[in-house]
Image (cartoon, rainbow, N blue to C red; front, side, top):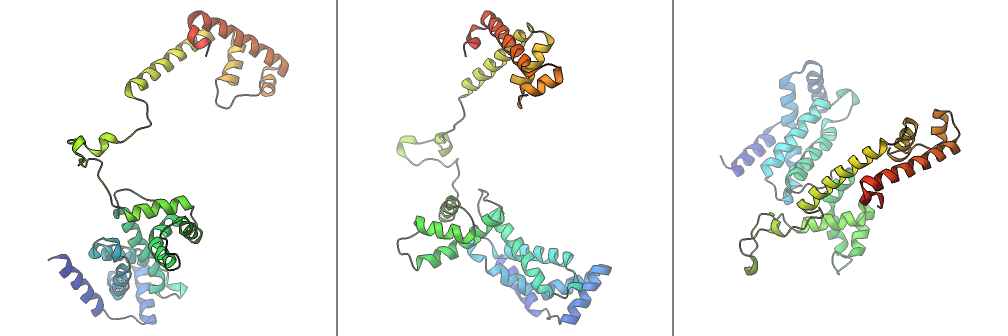
Length: 286
């Protein structure tokens, strides 16, 4: 059965399902919540499939199969049924609307593009409202999607202008594979990824940097062996730790004044410099 027939079958079944009065809906919700009565759940969900289809139709312009949107909306409907509390005296349709919409929107965000967008509430609001806000603002601004319109949309949705510009570019374009061949006659046989620039160092530079770092570490460890235990502790805690201990804290822990700690540190640094100049002159002058 093709997609259109499947959709028509779902719509007919939804339209044929009877509406539920408030009292009947409450009774079924109680049966499902307290007894996990599967028949009660089926009657509740079937009675609200019209709502799912109506909600899915609002998102049909995002280019995804309508059948899939309905299926995702049905997932949201089941989630709403699992969480619904009949004692709150709220109609199930009011409660389920949010879950149906959220499920459909999450599906669209996952599948609309191979490039994932933001998932924060503000980014979602921007994604689903940008077209509507842009069309509304275009009516009063004939110059197109300029920076002033970007600013107005950013203010309305609660995001920064850069996010609006980025999202507008994504919605206006289409995904492009990095493995797509370049049609330029001068670059025949090359793919787009071949011309993708990288800020990372070249492989030989990375290897060279790793070797240099290891060599420096060996030189420093060897130089530290020329220090006595107290000097090593001061240098490690003052110069080789991320936090960097203060003179006062070290003086307290060692039982000496902070001025004495400074003197010992300066003497240890001079000893290190002498050792490095002997064994590693390049690092000693850095």
